[in-house]
Amino acid sequence: MSTHGGRPLPAGAQQEEPRRRKGKGLSRRSLFAAAGAGGVGLAAGAVVHAAYGSAREPAPVAGVVPFHGEHQAGITTDAQDRMHIAAFDVTTQDRDELVALLQEWTAAIEAMVQGQEIGEGGATSGDYDAPPEDTGEASDLTASHLTVTVGFGRTLFQDDGGARFGLEGRLPEALIELPHFPGDALEEARSGGDLVVQACADDPQVAVHAVRNLARIAFGRARVRWSQIGFGRTSSTSAAQATPRNLFGFKDGTANIKSQDADDLAGHVWVSGAAGAGAWMNGGTYLVARRIRMHIETWDRSPLREQEAFIGRTKRTGAPLSGGEEFTEPDFALQGRGGPLVPADSHVAVAHPSNNNGVRMLRRGFNYTDGSDGLGRLDAGLFFIAFVVDARTHYVPMQTAMAKHDALSEYLRHTGSGLFAVPPGVQPGGYIGQTLFEV
Ligand SMILES: C=CC1=C(C)c2cc3[nH]c(cc4nc(cc5[nH]c(cc1n2)c(C)c5CCC(=O)O)C(CCC(=O)O)=C4C)c(C)c3C=C
Ligand SMILES: [Fe+2]
Image 1 (cartoon, rainbow, N blue to C red):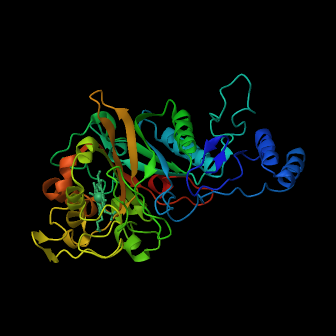
Image 2: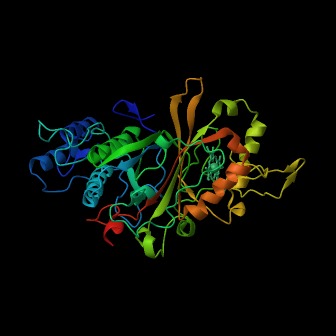
């Protein structure tokens, strides 16, 4: 296994150039790191650059996911292996302060995804008598394919006192309050939020650094309401990625929408042609977040035959129980001795588009473990994230069906929930959410 700074790198991660200070070429530590890694030529060139200012741009950093574009990154981006997601409550009442926060977040995210420290002074080159602008724990790490995706909760637009931030008439109809589903055990402190920030990266410290810096920038204007760390992806979002496994040990993401599926993305994920209150969402999507605790000790005591019947696929290959290989379409009509080979109450049968009005979703969830619960059981599960064009058609009916008919529900408990409007991507010079506040 390759290592970086003594720590193992996740599978597939490349040894990349470490983080730089914004606009200042490579930082000193980066120069030493580059030289130490056999990058003598790079280090020498960078010394020239550092000594003579911006005579030429620093070499491009590998592992950078472009920030600007039609859609925000972190949705169809190849799912990284680590995530830190945080929801914020906005504490200021001032619209200009909220816009300024989004502008500052945009600048910080732009820097961080390029592997740069944030602010002019970065972690160590600012005023010695002031707190550093960058918290510093990612200073020797690479860009790590960091993406930061930002969304807006319904409560940003209105609360009990009425409209907030002058956003009357801007609440999209699709940004509903999710209904209570049978079996929900939602915790207030793990649900809702005015803003959401989903940071994904190959390196967990890079994802945590991103959320931490955004929380620091938000001080006095917004505070973290809940946050969750995910340690392993449970979806592939590209045909080139292998399908990972969830904590039940099954391949998860097989039938997911992939970045190559342009028609499915257009029909099931991206908002387009919206008029009126939600017109600012064109090019955006809706993020559904559910913290789903899995009763893994009970699961681990159930026979393989039952486990496969609950999912509707084989544990080894992920093929449907009706036969074939992983990517073979399930045949729900094919009968065995005791009924359909893919049981009608299996997860795959209940979630399949053929039983859901043709609806599909882009799933991008993560495994999580938050220690144990004091009763010897792991507090572990799936932090479910899906991107959908409209939760009213693409999430609520499916979740309702799962809660009622999905045998797997017996092993699941939903403890956190959120629905967020994810605005379109940012153009150079713009900021996240600009269409909401200015168009
Ligand atoms: C409401 C949406 C969904 C929730 C919540 C959900 C939770 C959940 N899923 C698994 C494990 C698997 N899910 C699989 C497929 C699958 N799941 C959903 C939706 C929700 N899952 C969909 C739409 C699909 C695809 C259905 C299809 O088109 O065939 C699979 C099979 C492999 C795959 O296709 O990804 C597994 C395994 C768990 C453990 C879980 C909650 C903890
Ligand atoms: Fe599922």
